[in-house]
Length: 225
Image 1 (cartoon, rainbow, N blue to C red):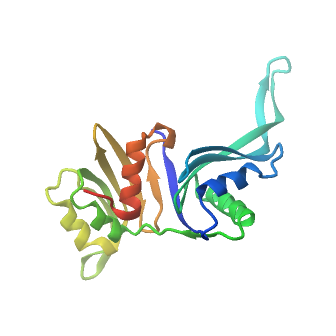
Image 2: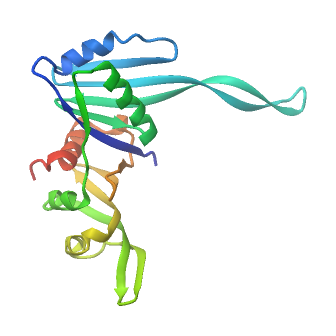
Image 3: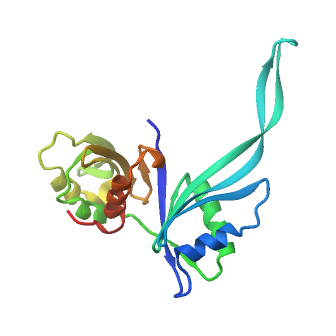
C-alpha cells in the first residue's frame, strides 16, 4: 500500500499576497533543466503543484555481452507534491524533501512567513470525537506497568468498545497511533506520531476532493461532525 507523509505550514500573508499571486510568481520561477515547478491554479484560493529536482544517480546494470555488471550515470527526478489552499501550504513528501521545498519558497517569497503547523495527538483525539472511525494500532512509551517496571508496548484497540477513554487517559504516553477514518463510501488510513508526523496510507492523487477536504478538517480544525 502506498503511503505519503504530510507536512502542513501556515502562510502569513500580507494583504497584497494571495494564492493567485503566489501562482504567478512561481510561474516566473527561473527554472532550468535541474529544478522547475509544474503548477495548476484550481481557483483563486487553491493551487496544486510539483517541485521537480533532477539529480544524477549511479545505476548498476547487467551487460550480457561482457557477462558482468557495470554502472552508468542516469538522471533521477525527485517529485515533491504540494498544494496551497488559502493560508496553508501542504507538502506530501518525506521530511528532507519538504525542507527543500520550504527553503526554496522562503528564498522566493521574502514577504511570506512559513510556519510549521504542529499536529498534537491530544488535540487530534479531541477533534476525532463524534467521527466515524476505527482506532487501530496504538504505541505507548514509558508506560508504568508496576512501581518498578516501565516499558513500551503496542496494542490494537480496533475491537475495544471505548477506545477514546484509553487514549484520553494515557495520551501523554502515546508515541504513535494508527486510525481509519470513514468518509462516505471510502476510508482513509493514517498514522500520527507524538512528534507531529502524519502519514497517509494512500497517494494524494488517489484521494478525491471530498476525502481531501475531510482530511483537512481533521488535521487543521476538526471541521463539522
